[in-house]
Structure formats: C-alpha cells, structure tokens
Image 1 (cartoon, one colour):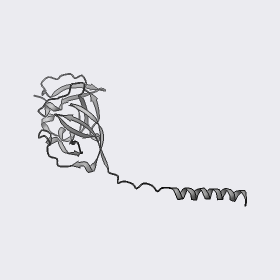
Image 2 (cartoon, helix red, strand yellow):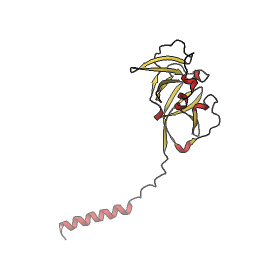
Image 3 (tube, helix red, strand yellow):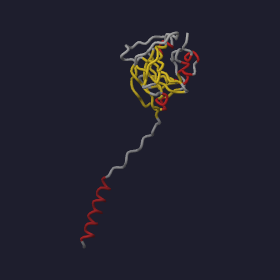
Image 4 (spheres, one colour):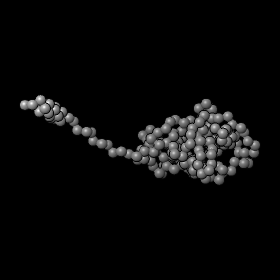
Length: 179
C-alpha cells in the first residue's frame, strides 16, 4: 500500500465515521413576513406607525408660538434648517397629553408634501409584527382615532392600533390650523 492510498483510506474512514453520527438539519419553520412599526401611546391608547411612513423620532424641541393658530399647534421648531410645525396630537383629537414633557416625543412625518411633527405621550420601541397578527377590523378603537386608524396588530397582552399619517394629513380639519 502506498503512502497516497493510505492517506485516502484514512480520509474515507473519517468521512464514514462522521456521516454515521451526523444529525440532519433542523426542519425549517414557516417564515412569516413582518411589518416594521414604531410603537407609542397617546390618550392612553397603544398605537403603531409603519416605519416607512415615519421620518424620525425626536425629543420635544423648543417651539416658537405662532399667532392666530389653533391651540393644538404648539408652534414651529428648527429641525436641521427646516421649519417643523409641531402639533399636539392629543389636543387635536380632543384630549390631553398625559406624560411629562421629558417623556414626550415627536414623530416627524414628511409625506405628500407635508412636513410635520406629532407630539405623543411616549414612544416605546420599534417592533416587527407578523402580518398574520394584523386585523383589518378592530373593536374598541376610540372614535376620535377611527378616521386615522387602519386595523391593528393583536398580541396576547396588547393590541396596537395602526395609525396612518396619510389619513391624518388628508383631513381638512388637521390641515386648517388658522383660527
């Protein structure tokens, strides 16, 4: 037996040994597509907004008040050289913000030619909800939110209502800020 065939036989023996004791690959679980959302609260309600509809989330900036606008318009802020109208979303909806100003956040929206910041009580986190947890029709959506909501993500402990900023921006009452 030559040196070459001896090495080959050794490799063949090792290959058989590992093949006999090898485990199969685990069965692949079904992959469920997800929706990426930012989770937040306002008026004591848990809401979610699709990340593709959200430009950024910032702390409550210093705002310059504007004369002759609705009280729910907090003013305008300078966001990296752009004027950002800042809206108290809770007051627009007929309620009040619950959280202290340090906990409040501004959801910045830049869509359909409108650049606006919506003040919310608290932003929890970014999440991936399986699209199989989405329900188009939800019970218990507050009436003031229903024109701007489109279903929600139902989890075992909470339901996250999907807020659609495009529907909010399309509302004539939201766009007419002057009194």
